[in-house]
Length: 184
Image (cartoon, rainbow, N blue to C red; front, top):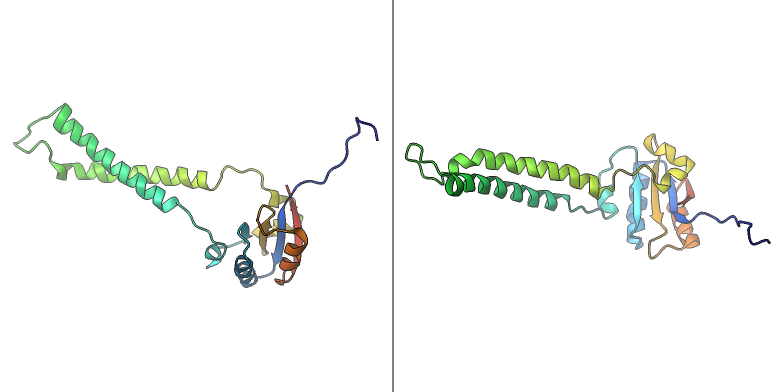
């Protein structure tokens, strides 16, 4: 073979995808997959399935991030008003105290909602990895049915337990309609 000739190489493997007919089959397969010790698992369905997120071990930091942002918004709204009314430009209106905290409540509340809401939107986009115009699962032709009437379970090749033949046999043993290789 000449030095300049290119050798066709097989694309890298992202993982294996199993297809199921019903939501109950997908949920049962997901529970059995995580019980078998697979960690890098993802499920796809045309509608939300109760218990599926817990079955794949999905946990999010979004509520904590939004809570912290709300507290920061409340503190910043209150401290801004305190700084303006007490320190920077104190005005004695009608004999009220300079630090009249009850009058600070509406702005403090609004700042809490504003900062928490904006943080929720931005954090959700970032944590979901968006925008993502391409994902390897789109390389499987049958995956088009995921938005119609089929259910899919993917085990990524990055999983520590992933071995191509054993994982394929495992997915076939779950009662799947078919097992497909997902290429990068």
